[in-house]
Image (cartoon, rainbow, N blue to C red):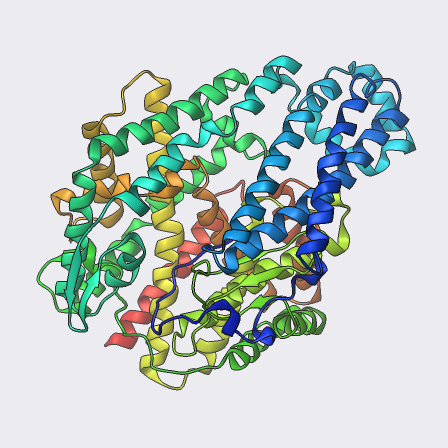
Amino acid sequence: MSIQDQKITDEPKDRSCIPVCDCWDLSKLFKDEDEWEVALKEFDSMIAKIEGFKGTLGLSPEKLKECLEFNNKIGILDERLGYYAQLRMSEDGGDSSSQGRLARYMNIASRSQTASSYQTPEIQAIPDETMEQFLSSDVLKDFVILLEKILRYKPHILSENEERLLSMQAEFSQTAEKTFSSLVDVDMTFGEIDTPEGKKALTQSSYGSLILHQDRGVRKSAFFQLLDGYEQHKSTLVNLYNGSVQLDVYGARVRNFESSIESSLFADKVPISVYDNLIKSVHDNLEALYHYYDIRKNALKVKDLHLYDCRVPLIPEIKMRHTYDEAVDMVTKSLEPLGSEYVDILKKGLQGGWVDKYENKGKHSGAFSAGSFKSDPYILMNYKDDVFNDVFTLAHEAGHSMHSWHSIQNNQFQHYNYSIFVAEVASTFNEQLLAKYLIDRADDRQFKAYLVNKQIDDIIGTIYRQTMFAEFEKITHEMVENNQPLTVDSCRDLYMKLLKVYFGPNVNIDSVSDLEGLRIPHFYHAFYVYKYATGLSAAIALSQRVINGGQNELNQYINFLKSGGSKYPLEQLVGAGVDMASPEPVNAALGVFKSLVDELEGLLK
């Protein structure tokens, strides 16, 4: 799922007031709540059968296949139930029936996971010679990929009892993350901000729009007022983050990994060199970023450029109105380089039940795509006709959904689900095509400058900024692994050093700026954010190949979408024409960034 902040303009309607034609059609999952309830009881009853396979998995390939086929059956049902419950919850988070539905599902899903915790250790306990014989038989041909992935973890799997204990820790291991979320989203208050439009409450959500306000005083007030709230809770926040890092280090050591970063990257078979190459490539390409901040300083006509000046659009958002159907038309036309089949399937989905289009009271904010094996690849939007960026959001989520559609159509359940490492490639690829489509057709200099500036700021936010976060995570985990304490001072000192590196000599870094490191929720999912940077880098490279190439380049990209989770991410991208094990894609993406900066400089003159 990909979630982006959306601006709120009008008072949202009750869910019941939204026309059915503007809501997603969840009947592919369940036709109604009664059918879901029947399926939940079936799911609950199936848990008892999981124990029946215990002790049989190494007897024969037929016995192992029987268990794996049952896992598929219960897994598909589990996924259908979970997606329905979560999607209904996202329609209106305040609806008590949706809350209860999701809670009941989570309880049974947790018991199912605990009941099956013996299976991976039992499969890995099968002698190597025996497993080789199993895999060479036709009986397990549909499960070879799955089994090879399980066996790869063999050095890192514990005994059955130890695995059971770890699975029982799953819920309370989220304490640091949940407490952080409750503290910053619920308990902490930040007051109000005076704006030309009147007083506005400062919250985690509203900060995203206030820091983009054209009035510099509004941006400055929001910046300092928000960080002042973090200043008052800095010790608690550092302790929460330290607890999260300690848990990562503990988990890696328990499973016999050399480091927490190796543990995190292991599932995707990504070498640490990819992570390190990303950081090095970004460091090698900072001059273009520094040049952009000089351009920004001149364009804003400020004596000193501060962090609260670095995100506001240089060209205010163009006042345009596009209906949802007009946005669909714009997006699908921009994606014509992907072929008529891709466009026809997408257009039918966007206009025929995939999308929950508009905001309503209690609805999940932002946007996401949710594709599961037995349903359409649904999209949640909060589309607004007068927010031009929502057209890009639609293109982004459509990329996710078409990735899911191709994966589902071309893979079995056990390996259809693609990795997060490649998830952002298809979505940002679509944004690249939409941007090119609009820039090529822009006959207004200001509109073209707006589009180029948006591309620049997107690359900064996705490659430069996420890489800074990734570097912070790598260093903090190394500190804990080397028995160096994470304290308020050590975290702030490190974050300040990184801010100075990534913003350069001509941006004024106020002393409180280092508190920003305490408010990044992604830090509670360690070594995740680098995937945004590698994803956009790969998307830029692949979009250039498809636009400038022929049928072969297009086929390679479509085959990448079709591969689902049947291959490891780096292998998938190599097949599409991009080698993320080398620094070249990141360097090439930042070369595009430099050319965009030069183009913007010319347009602003």
